[in-house]
Length: 208
Image (cartoon, rainbow, N blue to C red; front, side, top):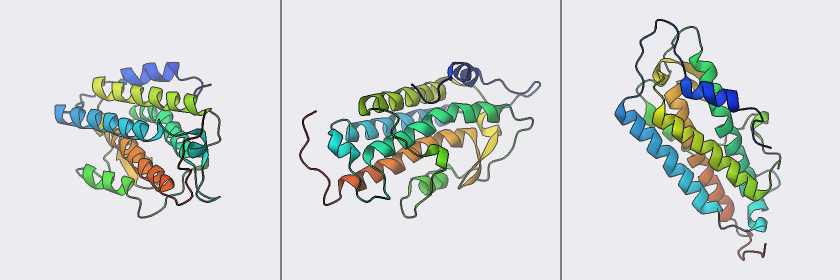
């Protein structure tokens, strides 16, 4: 089972991303496209390189009962990656364009998202449930991130002109939502490294 289960129609709408009739808003600049494509690819590789060699015991280790394991962190990231196309598609169908509360401050937004200085409570629907075996979990993350990378590389939608609220950072535009996905992955990669740095983290890889 994938997350969510019925994305085929959503993916088609996501890639087409039509604007409202009569609108002539601009798509991404070449510099914006290069930045987001590179950032999504970089954080994908960073995460997968860290977790791909871990054993089942290491993936399921929790430093405290109220903290997530590495596998749970990856599942959480995957849930939000899979939800991103639905969010952007719905936002681009908004009746009127809007302005981001972070207009002109992409770097500041990224820094806020990836910072681990303060804990952020994830919404209940984004909590991991252990729905996947480890190998399938990694495949789900790779598939969702690949689609988002392909979208960033090909879309001509006016992402800067349409906004929807982030639960923590307020109104951000659709391009910033793509940046947020990469920064969110980077934030949780740091969380994974914290788990692996725990004194009682299993050091010897178990036989699979």
